[in-house]
Structures are given as structure tokens and as C-alpha cells.
Image (cartoon, rainbow, N blue to C red; front, side):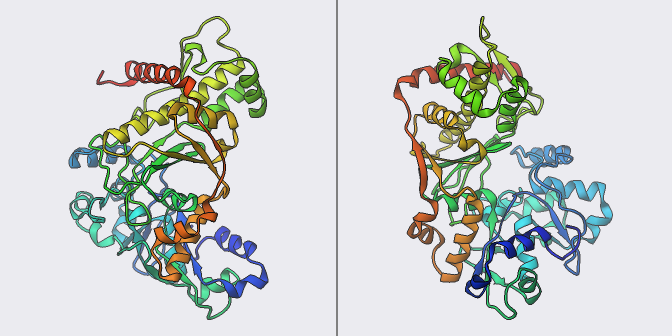
Length: 442
């Protein structure tokens, strides 16, 4: 959205969800949004250009430069690289900018007229001192001398951003003069963790969508000098280190498209067709669009270990499901090497969580129980819980813990210890093949 009118879809969504009888009972709002997206505002609070979202990679050169200057590699998803790109390629926009927000904090600004951001969302900008949970003046200066002044105040997890103004109240079908508090908001991953009840050390969440994320709560910062593990903060005052895979359900869709079979048919074929764990040595490196974890943008999808009969739809399908699971496990191993505790539970959400074979593979690869979450919109639920905690003036983590029904597991899968050795060998092959094919340092 280029103007300052807020999002029409968001307004309509709120109206659609609120029955007339419930309007007067609304006391708080929380906002979850995509991380990294750059929203630049002018002196009057107007958006100066369409948001430059996380998936926009035009700023790859700027990310490389900022990473080299800081000593920690940066991916182009991070907001700092987008701000530097704007300075170089849209100088008129950059010169007119007085404030930098992210999608969630922009919606909060539209609701309240106040600018603020929590550390969870801010940690995806590349401009935050994650350990101190404070803006990093040196990082901002590497972009421009004015950049630090564009950054909004940082809010504590249960701190109020403000109250909904009359214009947004009317737009969302709420009552004139209604007192509705707006919480600090956060990024989608941090809010999803709240919505799933992932608030304790050892709890790890996996989101299986077009891309995949794996993140877990840590009582201490997890800082990776290689830049592979993103050192995010969570929405409770702790930390939420994260890895992201570019290839997840889209890679599985490639097999579905090739075979012409549905996911249900392929899942059933893999289960009943006798395809064993590890696929008899067949390894799929599912890097169809390059990869972020590891940082191999030049990588491609690769199938190895083929024998007679290996090109059956059921083998290809299972090998792709395993390839994604093994990539996630590699990222989790990187986290453990940096001091992250080993996962005790895996909470899986996203479209891929509907596939029972994939859930079993993940449980077996990690040798860790897998839980699915009853609330499919975990990020929206997390934002609502944060808003409620803010209204109640309660600690966010304690509030989530006391309202565990919202994030109660919908089901679970236990790992099969009998295939642990098979997947340990598959993990070694997966890592070895990737390094030999795509890692320039090996």
C-alpha cells in the first residue's frame, strides 16, 4: 500500500471475523507481520513507496557489502540491505524518508498514530544489537548517517504501542470512542511461537510452507559468525534463533507435477510401496531455487544414488520429503553447535504438516516427538495472545503458559528408534553430497 490508509484486506478481515454482538467486547489488538519488509515513511507519515519485502533480492550486492563491513554475512532479506539499495537506486525516496518501519509496525502505526517496534521484529533488520536488544548505531551508520534517526523506539514485550484511533475503529467496524489497546506486535515467526505455546527452552517449531523455517526458544543469545543461523529475538524477552530453507513444499510440488499424481496418492504409494527409510541410498538435494541454509544461492536440485527402480514416483516423493527434513536437521545441528539446547519437542505447522508421512519422517530424522498445532493460523493467534497480555498488563510468556489451550497440540507422532542409524547415514550422505557439489570452500 502506497498511501497511509492502511490495508483494505486487513480492515475487511477484521470486519468479517467480528459478529455484531462481539464488537463491544474487543479490548485489544495484536499485529503479526512478515519480517524484514522495508516501509519508508515521509515527514507527514505517508508511505513513500510500496513495501520492499523479504523475498526481494535486488539488494544482494548491498547485503554482501554490509556483511563484509560487519564481519558477519548478511542475506538480502535483511532490511538494512534494502535501505542501502534505496539510497543508491531511489535517492529521491531515501532523501524524503524520515522513518523506517516493518509491515507489522506500519499496521500498528496506522492503527494508533504511534511508531514503535519490538525486538523480535527488529532483529530481522540487520540494525539491532541482538544481545543487548537495542539499536546498533554502528550498523545503522554503515548504511547512512541518517539511518539511526529513522528507527522507531523499541518496545518491551508487554508494552503498549497505543490505542486505536477513531478512523481505524470505523474502518474495522468497531465503535466510535471504543478503548482498544494495541500491543507492540512482532514478526510472524515470533508470533507463531506464541500461538503454538513455544516459550520454553527445548521447544522447537518447524513451519512447512513454500519455504521452511525452524526456530526455537533460547534463554541466551545464539550468535552465528557464519550468518547461517539468524540471531533473532522472541516476543517474550528471550531469543529465537532461526534457520530458513528456500525449498520446502515447492520442491515436493515438483515431484507431484512430474508424476501427475496428487500428494495423497504419492503419500499412499510411498507408504504401501515398500519404500524404506533412507530410500535405499537415494538422496534428493531439493535446492531448486538455490538455498539459504546453507548459503548456496547457486545450488540446484540434485538426485543422487540412483539404482534400477529408483525413478518410481514413490521413491522420488519420499526422497524429496527426506531431503527437506535432512536439510532442517542440518540447520538444527548448526544451532546446537552454537549452544542451543537439543530439541525435546518439535511443533510443526504449515501446509506440509497435513502430510502424515512427512511428520513421521521428521520425527525419525530428529528422533524427537512431533506435535501438530490445533490452530492453523498460529501467528495470528500469537498476536492475539500478545494483545491480550498487554491489555491484562501481564507478562507475555506467563500469559501464554496460563492459556495453553490456545496452543494445545492437535496430534502427535513418536519417532521410530529402529531407523535412527539409517537416517544418521542418510544425514552424512546429504551433507557430503551438498558440500562436494556446492560448497566452494571444500
